[in-house]
Image 1 (cartoon, rainbow, N blue to C red):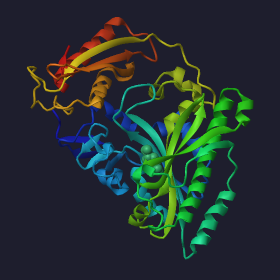
Image 2: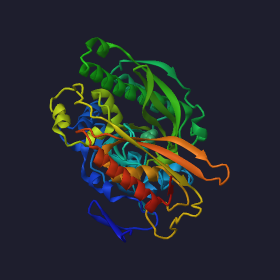
Image 3: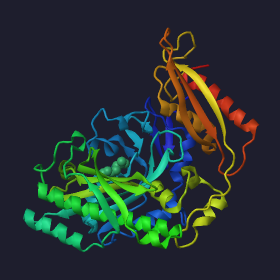
Image 4: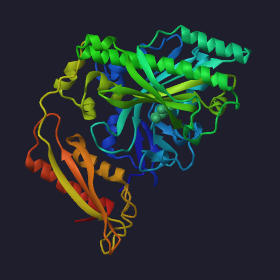
Length: 446
Ligand code: PHE
């Protein structure tokens, strides 16, 4: 039942065995929350953008989400077996084309053209797509902002280049943060080979690392003072935010870091970043430059800053939500009353569909029984319940000692953000989930 073509952003693509974009996802491709006036995603984007001078950083906020596998993975040095490439994690238009899973998909093309525009860096804000779990902080569409800053050698010695980077850093405002912990410059880095010596020196990488960290500490400092002011806490707004730099792994940066922030007594990961691998810059025609890049999830920042408790709210058409962000200043989100939840469990056998008619052929886009991928199940539930599903949790899992078959039990929590659901409609949704599970995923209900 898979059509031969799929049309996205006015362009028609051929489908193939990789195609796994449900029709329910299509309307999101044109929503552009990051550009919608007064929307908290757009407001948050603008607050972060305000910390990057436009004379240095070009803004790109209109790039199409349909990109090639080469742009999203290959050019960034993703190994062939990286999980991010799997059909259970990524939306494939066809084997060569995906919905971008991150804004880094645009790195190479922008590195290539920046210079012509007279800029030394960029900020890209965009919608990104990932197949994932269902809960209050995950949604198959979300927004990222990516930034990068390059420095040209231009005949300078390495020492002069390092000085230039450090001088620029001195010119930046002082962030109101306390760095309580910081990993080493090169700290394992997921086993990434150390890049220093392959086109830039350790001293250069170190200077870039400092510049990068200062710039991002400024972002955190701004976001958290806004959050405190929004909560009406002027004293907290003046306090230093505790942060720590943790080593991380991204295929396209080395060293790589994550910035974590202490928020309500918990360490929260805010963003990923690092020194751009020299081979990627070389490939993009920037052999004579070095630089850094970062990527931040805009929803995560907006949820923190406004106190928005559920990621589904961003997509709400309810005036009680949208009406709260019209003023120029950040104000804490006021929850409208919380409607009752209603949970339903569903249990089924997966694996060797022994005895069951696990229709091998019928060819749904989702795996037909051979292998169970949790994200396929999540998507099926979203397809039926849409934004009426608050979260889905695996509550039991066991393997039958005799048959070796595996049983899974999931709890689906139905709750509307806007009204009270009736028992009948929840029962109907659950019945649909059950029948689609049998039809499309070839599992055996218990
Ligand atoms: N693209 C990465 C992600 O989505 C974030 C990142 C961007 C990391 C740029 C390093 C440099 O997780």
